[in-house]
Length: 77
Image (tube, rainbow, N blue to C red; front, side, top):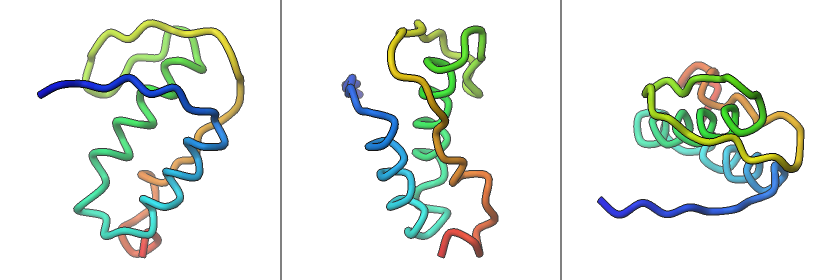
C-alpha cells in the first residue's frame, strides 16, 4: 500500500477525529488509533506508537489530540 504524509494542524486533526467518532466504531477504530498514535508520537518525545513503528518527532505546534478511540462503541454513535 502507498502511504501518504499529511500535514494538519491539531485543530484540523481533532475535527477529523470528531467526524470519525460519529461513524460506526468497527469501521473506524483502527484509523482513529493510527491518527492518535502518530499525533502522540509527534507531540510527546519518546512516545511509542501502539504498532511499534518508528516515527520521527517533528517540532511544531503543541497541544492535545482528541481521544475518540478510547470511547466505548456506544459513545461513538
